[in-house]
Amino acid sequence: MTRFALNAPMVSPLKRLEHLFKVSMAVLWGLVFFRRGRKERALQRLPNARRVLLVRIDNRVGEALLMTPLLEALAGKFEVDVLVHTRCARVLEGHPRVRKIIPFERSKWWLLPLAPGIGPLRKAGYDVVVNCANWDAFSGTAALVSRAIGTNACVVGPSVGANVWVTDVTVPQKTGTTSEAIQRLELLRVLGVSTAQPRMSFRVPRLHSDFREWLAQLPQQPLAVVNPGGRLDWRRVPAGGFIAAAAALKAAGRIPIITWGPGEEPLARGIARAVEGAVLARATNLDELAALMQHCGLTVCNNTGPMHLSVAAGVPTLAFFVHISIERWGHPFAPHAMVDLTQTMGDPAKLEGAIRHAVTEFSATRAARAS
Image 1 (spheres, one colour):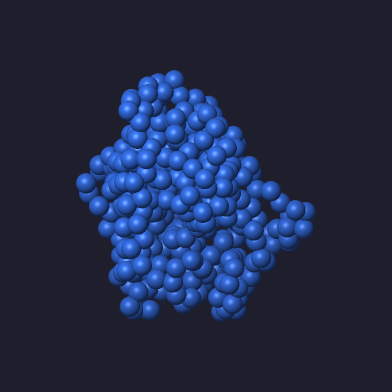
Image 2 (image 1 turned 135 degrees about the horizontal axis):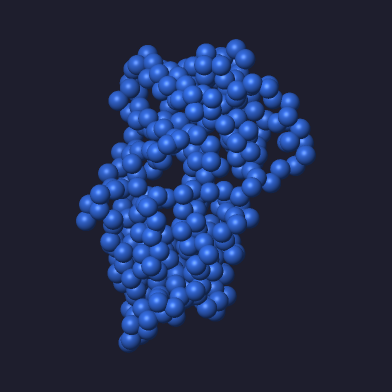
């Protein structure tokens, strides 16, 4: 199998030990859950499957949003519930394609059948449980939790590592692409579901009147969201790059609205001060940020959760990638643009020049299409 290449920090010895522990648990629980003929009976449920549970239980906003193409593909054909990390339930709550969002507390996942919340899910009568983990490495927590829930269901998951011990149908990686969105859609082929292009989506933002009033007070001219933050420093363009981006937007006739997440206000405030006419956004929750992006009609950001949110909200998005694959994690199709800046990171002048060029070109393209 082709492996995904990641330019990420080295895996720590502790992480390696954790991985070995989860592989051992997969083998052990594969034996514990073994029942003669169970896999054959599970496979027999596929042609008449109706109730589906999607499992993605890591604490990442972007990963939760990358579930939405599966929701769109399954819409109207199945009853779909989603099991997500407790802190990510807010990302998919109210999504029109989901019957039920189920928050999962991971702290005691290793108890498996006895873990909080697993018992009711075992009794819920799902026909299929889909482990929506990545293909680059075995995700023991998701695989084991999916197996614990799907005692009588058909458990589907990626064909990687120890999944074979706890999964009824392991799906090989789709050849010719490393796109996470496309690879996850491949899991649905066992249900007879396929789609040519992943489609991200988000609920209609839920807003309070005070935020609507703030939106109405923004300048009545072309705007753009600039979101310079990101969870991981090694994947972020430095502040100087976003100062260049905001200045390029201003030169193109758009007022940059600088947004920020927890702990990022000083970064956003510094960029807003550096560019005359830029506006520092107020604090926003997920719905407010999506609504602001839609109001502005253009987003410039790093490869991070707000990038996926902007795309899911249907907003043209220009995203900067550093040390990570655009093909795997980006959305390199119109009306979006993804730019790899890895080779310019050691030269601030070259980096800022590349950003100014990309922003100017992207803004011009959007203006031409709007006219």
